[in-house]
Length: 286
Image (tube, rainbow, N blue to C red):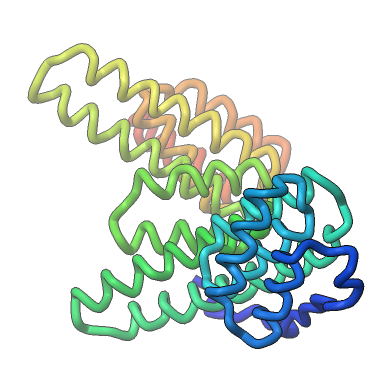
């Protein structure tokens, strides 16, 4: 994982305790509590405000701000969404808050990940990877289109041996399409799942295992072919495609594709290598 931090200026929250005569008693009181850093009293007051006035855009916004201060990102985003559904008055401040908490949680995730990799205690390693996963998930909630959070979350899940959990962020990365390794990794996961099912089939002779194995092989091929179209010179993607076609017993299809690639780009070493691997597996030694 790239061990880099994202730096962002600390968000300056302007609460504005002016025009009390236009605000409810709850809003006025909450702002005073916030400026006095009595956040728990401010939250209690704001909860009364939004209960009395569900369309209080400022009440929901301030409540979201307090949840952010507490580190409760899901509730923060829920409150912000309610504020925005009422009006766009606090939209810019909400966007700045999301950027701030995206960077903060990304940095926390990197820190926990590094602690895990530097530790020799298994309990500490697991705990720090779990904290890293939580932090990367929070950063993703704040900036759903940021590829860095997804990729780091994938590496964290892999280190926790939670391979199935890595599938969803990898699928998101594939849809974003800016990270070639996402195609290779997701294709490899499906190929390995297929191989495991085929191993089960050899023992159980249960046709369901065989059917599901080929479903996974086909998923892998579909994903990797998309990756090859987007990144035709990525050696890792091409290698994974070869493995997937071999596992799916589709040597003829694969050989035809890579033969065509060699003919079009005779100096492409990746196409030549993969074509050679496929010929080898087909016992076509010359």
